[in-house]
Length: 335
Ligand code: PBG
Image 1 (cartoon, rainbow, N blue to C red):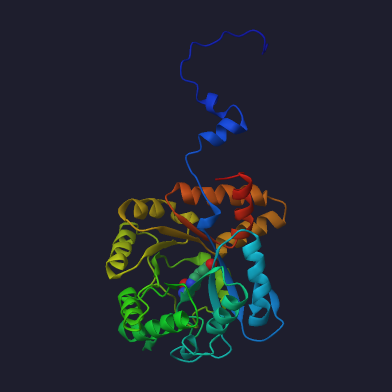
Image 2 (tube, helix red, strand yellow):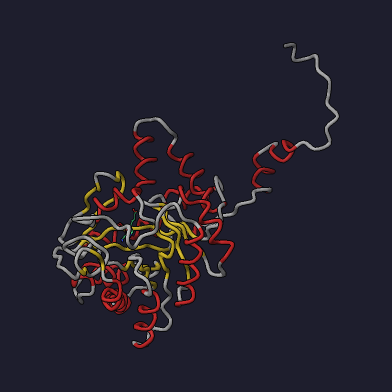
């Protein structure tokens, strides 16, 4: 075709006008993000001198408590203001009693972290699965998790995290009524100021695979389908979110993120609290694996993926790529 011979079309509306250069493209962005909305998950383990890479999550580590402050400094220096702590204890039992131990791993991590890097915001994951010998998220009754027997264990764990310095607690167990139980216990102990971020809309997902290796928390039998949600359901996510808000959740979470953008959209339209989305271990590992093979451009893909989560309606993003994303937001590459 001869490029010189063409007729100008009589077109009034030309969407390309607003894509002409970087300045106008940035001006008309519909999705705005800020690094203040990023939360970085971290794994803390017993022992000393440990900074061990998690095989299924290259670039993510297990830290012993003594190695944690340096890692927290890095998080802060990257411009991320909040962390979500997971503990890997050295002893497990039927009811997960090391979850609420005074010298439990998360409790020790909180004390050390708050002392060394006090200006980060510390959120803790409240669940039993890393602490129970059977790997389920609560106390068992036969072969199923006993919902109501688990509530006091969760409440006790949340309180002990708060007493060790947690700024916010995030229950991830999916027991019915846990937000109410935790709120009541915190309030009875004078901790009315501590917010609860509920993993309200948490699906039974294969995307947690790498995390379970990282946290040594895979169930020794069965699965989590009697408490985590069925991925065929979206309306039920709204029910879960509203229930938890009624019980006192200050923020709700949808998890995982990328396969659940429709759920993030629906929940965010229905609630009047901040909505967090958790881009989980499997999402991280897929992107990391493909980029390590040179099959995708890691930075470009994580920017696009993170933006999609915000575009779907999330206010907050929990991600293993928080440090990188903070930089890209700061640079204006996204946001
Ligand atoms: C604990 C918990 C899990 C995750 C967060 N909290 C695992 C699970 O429910 O099996 C998953 C996080 C991730 O995959 O990054 N219940």
